[in-house]
Length: 161
Ligand SMILES: CC(C)(COP(=O)(O)OP(=O)(O)OC[C@H]1O[C@@H](n2cnc3c(N)ncnc32)[C@H](O)[C@@H]1OP(=O)(O)O)[C@@H](O)C(=O)NCCC(=O)NCCS
Image 1 (cartoon, rainbow, N blue to C red):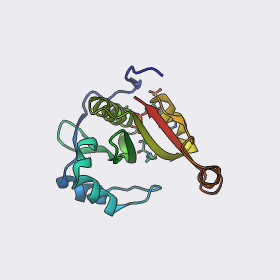
Image 2: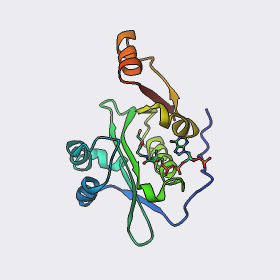
Image 3: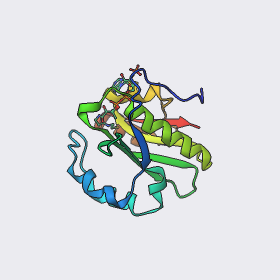
Image 4: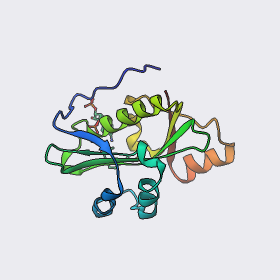
């Protein structure tokens, strides 16, 4: 797999990425997460623990919120789970989501993390494939794989770093 950073065609050079902090909690709660669930407990657990070093906010040059990426690191330190990725609907398609994922990949590499995992739906598959993710169910017994794919209609994807 290529380790070269993916450069989306619509890259927005006016945005910058910083670590997520507790100050961002109320912003995260105020966002329109539909069709994703608004998991407040997950927000504050992520941003009040050491996970925050792998969670990011994208904002414009005036500090206006553009997007967020929240993760959890595995206990063995070798994997990272991408819990939430959301870009404001008014600025989608400008490379902000891709830039957040690339930032995560870079930080994970520097911390010795080997894999990033996520669960998503078919509509997002192409977005993540462009960013180096592929479907991987190798850690699941067949019945759980069937539950994820058939009953829930979801995909498990992994990027190796
Ligand atoms: C999915 C999401 C995060 C993408 O963010 P974004 O900033 O709009 O995406 P980008 O502009 O970085 O897109 C990067 C590339 O992926 C493509 N892409 C974006 N969304 C896509 C989709 N749903 N399907 C296929 N390709 C997609 C873009 O066209 C772009 O390709 P290009 O470089 O060839 O132009 C954003 O649409 C979003 O917040 N959606 C609602 C929440 C959500 O679904 N989150 C993911 C849950 S797993």
